[in-house]
Amino acid sequence: MGKNLSVDETSLSNGELYTILTNKSRKGRKGTIEAMIAGTKADKVIGVIEKIALKKRNLVQEITLDMAGNMNLIAKKYFPNATRVTDRFHVQKLATKALQEIRIKYRWEAIDQENNGIEKENQISNL
Image (cartoon, rainbow, N blue to C red; front, top):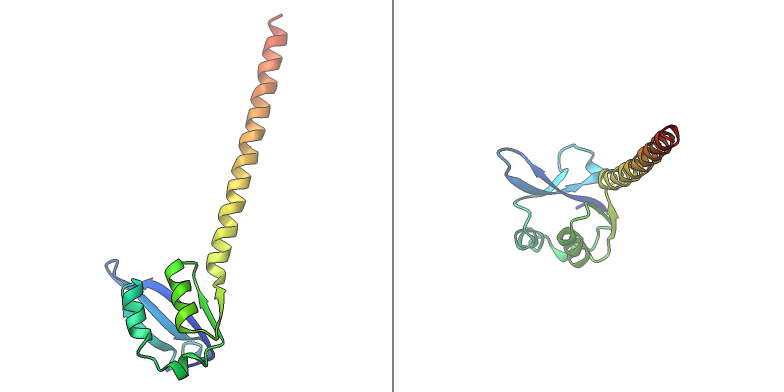
């Protein structure tokens, strides 16, 4: 078990979801996958993680995960010495979504402003 772990969900085929616990220091080489769990429900994930010796789990210093509430609670309870870090994919996704919402808001304001200007011009020319 490495000092830096990652927990994420993935779909391998036909929409079947799996939770994968990876050792980030292995960088994709042999021993990278610490656990692969069918499903994402907390009780299934906990059942597998509890089989990992507490002594090994206490060695984990950092655990990277998405923003799923159940995964955060699992990481907090079963890797008590680890700092929880939100993965950059989900941070970027949130930031992009917020930026898009702001962009749309200001675009609609600009359209409204333009339409109001056209309406005022039409009123003036009809006088």
